[in-house]
Length: 509
Length: 82
Image 1 (tube, rainbow over the protein chains, first blue to last red):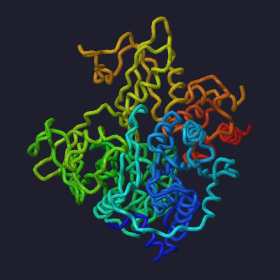
Image 2: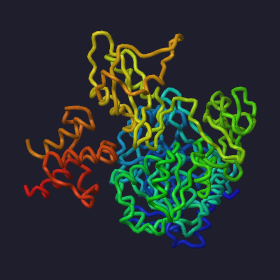
Image 3: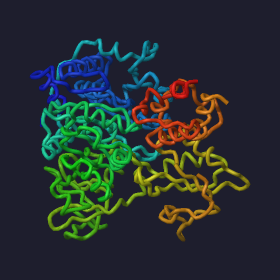
Image 4: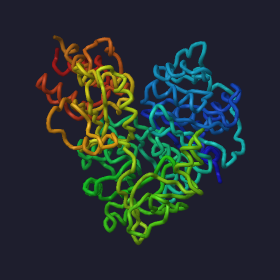
């Protein structure tokens, strides 16, 4: 195994002036990148951060996030990249659960500061953009003035990162990934995409999600260039950047492509350098894939599927098979084996529907400090994905949904219980169920169905305002509906499927 | 009601779901704070176009014009010649 940080260091040695990261007018070459990462590592080591200690990042995509990530790796620490859109209500349980020793956040990150203050053992805080970090924290510039730490040998099985999946706040689920996991998944992705040092990508996917992290690592590890764009609020700016930077790649979730196609006249831009697109994060409707290919006929589209529990990627559909395998999530990536099994864990033949199981060098070692949850999904080296589907005679995977109630909205996954817990805090709410409803752009939108408390007259805006204060913005329900009772089974379980149907009356958005 | 006040009320009501003016400072980043997303920006632009009878061109749709109440007010002042 060659650890990713060692790959980056090797590029920095042979081609220090090659550009690694671009953000706005800022361009950082490999030499400067690795120097900054080593200085951050030197700071961590001098501050008493030991091998295996956890370094949390609450930082949106920016160059410093990548430097901190690789710096933590050089220092032998494990990176805990947290969803920067979350609130203190989420951060505190994650930081506590991971036993974080160091926290990197932006000066404006009030929620991060509030969460750190809640911990019994306050983490060492490194603050970005701070003129002065305050007495109990260190400014980023100050940290980077440290003596650089030389690279040290990396144990392949050592913990490299903990990625918190969108579990509920009561039970954080931290996916433990090793250096070997990252190295293997990156190599497989680079192989099937044919990535080289000549490639460049415009990235809008957050590094704290496994998809965005894989985009970051695949490019840095092989000397390619990553252009950071902060968000999709102005889609035409993304396309302008693709054209200006002569980018060869772009990665998105289905809603990303729906937005670009709906809002930007792609034909008006010179995208001649754009060699490929990747799509993951939920099934893309064949009609959307067809529109995308028609709009960009010279660009290969890679449909992909994976899980954080498998580092990122499990399958890809070779672009030349899009037409004869429409709707397929593709074949296993190099090194991965897939099977379909029944409830009892027995292999099913091709064509039969069941649960997708995966085995390979990217599969996690388990959930952090949660042997029970780990045992529920890991069996003799195989990962139960919780996704349903079938394999055809040629080994192509066709997915048919998830067993869980997880809502996929845009690039995000939302556990209904997480939103339900927040809404249930309100006295005027007797009962609440949160479901995903079809949305043309987002794939799914969040809807809250609420039974008001006796005598209460709840107000949709008040519900949303409460969610806004307690939850990440993307978790705020787009629709709020008040009902007299929730549909339930005889055993009292909420019949969620009924709630996803368009409401006839009582709609109050 | 002046432009600034109108925009402020729209943002408070539609994105923060409140009438509480203290929820948002005029200089706060609407995008950085997750107040306006890719869907919200269309609602905001639709509101400005309708309220002021203007057409906002694609090249005007940049963060510099829409990232805060201050920025939107300045943009409107330029566009309306006020």
